[in-house]
Amino acid sequence: MPNSDAALPQAEKPQAEKIYLPKSSESETLQKIRHTASHVMAMAVQKLFPKAQVTIGPSIENGFYYDFDSPEPFTEKDLKAIKKEMIKIINRKLPVIREEVSREEAKRRIEAIAEPYKLEILEGLEAPITLYHLGDQWWDLCAGPHVESTAELNPEAIALESLAGAYWRGDETKAQLQRIYGTAWETPEQLAEYQRRKEEAMRRDHRKIGKELGLFIFADVVGPGLPLWTPKGTVLRSTLEDFLKKEQVKRGYLPVVTPHISRVELFKQSGHWQKYKEDMFPMMAESEADRLLEQGFVMKPMNCPFHIQIYKSSLRSYRELPMRLAEFGTVYRYEQSGELGGLTRVRGFTVDDSHLFVTPEQLDDEFMSVVDLTLTVFKSLQLKNFRARLSFRDPTSDKYIGTDETWDKAEGAIRRAVEKLGMDHFEGIGEAAFYGPKLDFIFQDALDREWQLGTVQVDYILPERFDLEYVADDGTRKRPVMLHRAPFGSLERLVGILIEEYVGDFPLWLAPIQVRLLPVTEEVLPFVTQVVEQMRSLNIRAEVDGSGERLGKMIRNAEKEKIPVMAVVGVKEMEANTLNIRTRASGELGAIPVANVIERVTEAIAQYTSF
Ligand SMILES: [Zn+2]
Ligand SMILES: [Zn+2]
Image (tube, rainbow, N blue to C red; front, top):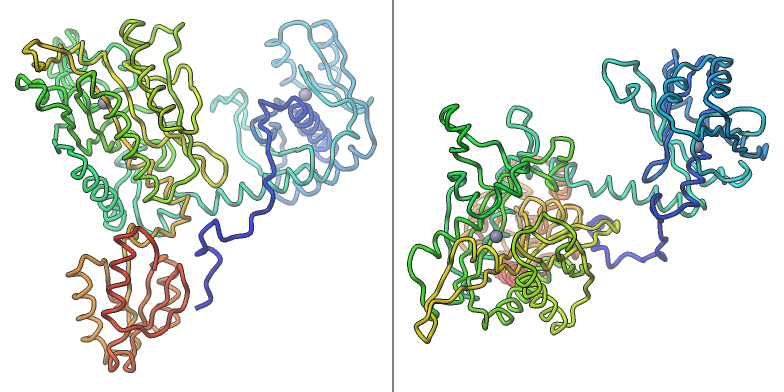
């Protein structure tokens, strides 16, 4: 089988030297280029479409856009013509001239060219009113900044990207406009790199791959941000869960299960209701009177207060500590619907949550062992590119609960652990949870985008609020410290990130289907069925392609579904008790005895490697 390029792990591909792409917000040069390019584009549009009216045209994160009111609908072909016209304007080396005018003068000039949108824009502007001219050819109201001449723009570093509909002032009741998106960079190399990353992001998009591989769906009638996991996606999730549960058993965690809703009172005691209400689903009250009294039930946004109740259910002795309660707990948060995208931002998600109740003396060791567990998890998932963020409180903000002293203590514990472990880290001031500082693991993906994965938090405050105690060895009552930790973070987000990182090519241990047997003729069906049964009895996720298609088609399907191991079986293989193996990781391996295949697959799964 010719091994497709997509199957190669990223590291095996030749790495070109990395081109740094500055963000608009951090480069004034880029802002100037993009602003000017947008004016040049608007001038080109009005040259080609004299009836088009100009509205707004800002510079944005990766480029710029302009909105036009034009009686003619723009087409993709028009974009080419507009770009050509832009090149002509750039080559004329028009100076970009700033002119400050009075409001009356601005109004007079706008009326002279009959552009009513500009009048409305003018009304919203504060002095000084500035116009920017491209030579004596064209002008628009703008605050800048711009380059000094169109000659400073490189036509080969500019691209017109797409067309979209828009409304004047973003208001559906107002005029419908046509938006042209463009991008502009300092050099053609930057533009090429930007376009490469955009394409790569599309190729890796977990929403697209998730659909192709049949891992999850969204349904309008269920609601935005609420994924439904199909059988294959569920296998993937459960495999991740089982993996972590196994690691947790080794480390003395105790499993618990808690409900999805509770009295609002629980979250008043924890402080979530006061600090976090806006992010929770609205309260369910049985009557209007209850609603007014704030008596009712809420969907849980966090698991901590439930685990605290289990801790509190009896008087604990120091002999029971550290007590590590663990649950794959599904929580619900009311994200704005505009912010929802695939699995990376959802309204219901499962946290691999655990709460450790420890004595102050146990804190440092427990913290380190949690960090160690997190690193083990990342290693097994082959996630290498991450840094640790010390997420501390912003001392000037009032969104935190607890005293300065407890915060200093908790932040100190995190700092000590990170320094002792010699971890690559940075500080994120203002990134703490409202009840305590965190150590967050920030993962950088193949496109230099950053995602928060695991988290460990030190908390002196909830034990205080819930009046938690234990009996110390001297018989006195003492207060435990709590650690909140989740190496995966959210299972939903983790799966989204893994899909993009692997481009759908899951390592053998995670693949929903690990082995597919492709029978070349009906004659071998009893044999392949027996092999599949044998594999399944050893916990290998194997299946038979029973489609009756020709071999070429069966292979193509298995490739499309990114199944790690394909086993072709004809009469020859059946008689020799072998399987003809092709894997995504290693290509064609030829005929291998069945027992040997099973052994190697089992071994690869156990070692989190590929076959
Ligand atoms: Zn401008
Ligand atoms: Zn917690």
